[in-house]
Each structure stands twice: as C-alpha cells, then as structure tokens.
Image (cartoon, rainbow, N blue to C red):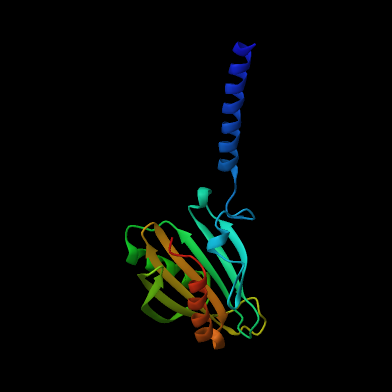
Length: 188
C-alpha cells in the first residue's frame, strides 16, 4: 500500500506545483489586487487621502502601484505610487518618463523641473520633480490639469509618483502629496 501511495503523492505534488506555476504565467497584467500582503505599508487612509486601488504589472510584485484619491477638502487630486525595477542609466530613465508623459497627453508641456530631497526612515533620497500642464480631454471645456512626476531611485528599484489635479490646485496638490509620502512606507 505504501509503495502505491508514495508515487501518487509525489505525482500529485508535482502536478499541483506545475498548475500553480502555469496559472501565474497565464495571468494577464495589469491586475487589480484585492489580496495585497503589504497593506500595513499603505494605510487605507492618510491625511486628506484614501487608498483606491492596488495594481500589479508583473508577477511577484516586481512592478506594482498603489493609488490614493483626495477626500474631505476642496483639493481634487489623484496620486499613484509606482514601484518597479530601475534602469542602469538613471538620467536616461528620467528622460524616458518625461517623454512618456509628453507623448501621452496632447498639448502637454513641462512647467518646471527641479531636484528635491525626500526623507524616509531617517534617510535622505534625491528625487526629481517635474510638473506638466495639459488640457483634460475628457472634460468638455477642457480645463488645464497640473500633473507632477516625482522619481526617486531606491537601492532595490524605482519609486515614482504621478499626481494629477486641476492646474489651479497644482501647488496645493504637490504639498499634499509630500504629506501623503510621510504616511506611507515607500522607501522599502
């Protein structure tokens, strides 16, 4: 009996492992995550913001994002935090990110670009903050939109924030996002 049972158990284990690996390979990305193992790093609420969605763009959270929406004030802002691998050439990566925004939004132009310092867990990080302006194609009268791109390079990857608000609230949104970053654990 043992001689028959052992090969069956081994075969079943291998089949289960193969099916699990196959199901991961067949997942079409991006996918919205409802079972996210890092909730404690990204609270459901931060001052002025509520967590909206978490998306994975690759297996094993090699590339994912966490979106927050403003609430409870006049500020209308969506801020999405992205985590993904970094390129070898940081300046080329920043330029590629800027180009991608300019290509994605008709009439987009760079309003400002500056280097800033971010702090997390007692460590300072150099970051690039680029502010764009463009018209919102969804809204009929097309009010101007202010969109910030913030990029910091971590030891294990890239941290990026895309924040969008009405242009008249651009400075307020920038300050609010910097406060949001104090509430979440983005540096690890």
